[in-house]
Image (cartoon, rainbow over all chains, first blue to last red; front, side, top):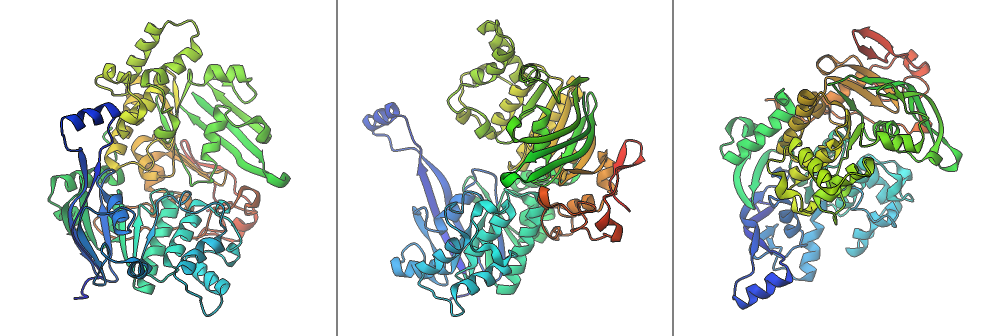
Length: 277
Length: 318
């Protein structure tokens, strides 16, 4: 049963398209059903422990909706997701607390995802408070050790997010996600806002954390090169559907779907051959 | 077109700290060529772009030395009025994020015509619209008339970026400064925009200063590449030479940090440490504290910019 860490089955989520008041009234009288966009259309996949799964797609493909639905930010229309055998969507409040202790998220924007009015001690200890965890070695010792693990210096606890660079803030975001010692991390475009040199540092950190702690990572990005390098298996999303699932080693040579080839070719132009001149 | 001659800029930091953000920068952009400037955030690349157009608030500047020329005109001490004549008309600017750089409440034609009205006070609205339509089609809009009344949010990402290009082109400038115009967008759109910009250079003899942290992007568009680090120029030369056989260890490290799509699948190698802050630069070479090849002399004495080939310069003791 517990073969997979996370198992997602037939997940669907659609959003109703906002209309102008005039159109709303018209469609009410015409008894039209509200227009909806299928952001996630029958998504099924699974992830084993210690695995990095890449989710690749352009903007609008539904990759962020997937992350948010799994994290409970959006409510799914139908489908199920099991973390360690427990259904995330039907769990009650206390069960959810337990589930999300094992599943945490790293966000894209290193500026918007940290509260500017909280210092690093407050930011990192908030999850501990919610889960009522008191570290044996004392809170500061524990937090300093965690900061060290993500490559930040010990004098950081009293500082505020504004005193850090983008790359350092992303390390803080990763540290916050790790503080509860989760089994799965969802990283939604976690390196997209960073310079390439800092990107490489963060990717390196994620891989090291995976090896050291044995965590799994769902790595979401629009960047073919980055996803292919960090993950062992890749799911390609297009208009909310999984169009292909493939081992990263075989992506360049064996990807079949038209959309996959289009993405790969664009990335090859950008990363290897250069534009036609 | 653009000549930057031994330009240094020191800004006022908080607590009366001096921040030397640019040191002895010499660069030039020839007609019909593209100079790519590569640098991490904090390297001074955006400050350089802003000082070319005099966009930095006067109160924040502590000291300037050296000169910047646009079309042989000295602009370092130009008045605000003179600068306003240059901005938009002789030099166009393409910003990073079209969503924040455009006014969400203005129609596309109003947005672009604003530049026209700023330079030609007497122009009638018909001629202004004409100029907008011309700029839009030059930027690759196939049916510009259809989009004149669109608001930014009604355009796709690619169209928004093209509208930004049209805005920079509307007064027919000879030089474009593009500050990270393709960062954080999908690869397909990036190649589309890069191809469009290169077309402007090749077909209209436009000169361009293209700023990016991504050497992969710069390779596609530039003729020459300059590597900026900590306000200093570390390497400058023809793009193919700099990228194929980098002479400065920093350039080599930047290339190794690029995500690649080669057959062998391996992670990019990160550069250790972080960029030093402008008021705390190493005494010797600015890259000495992170350089794998640093020797004694690198830590103590700053290397000079030396010419190692035709139009090829490097700042390194190697």
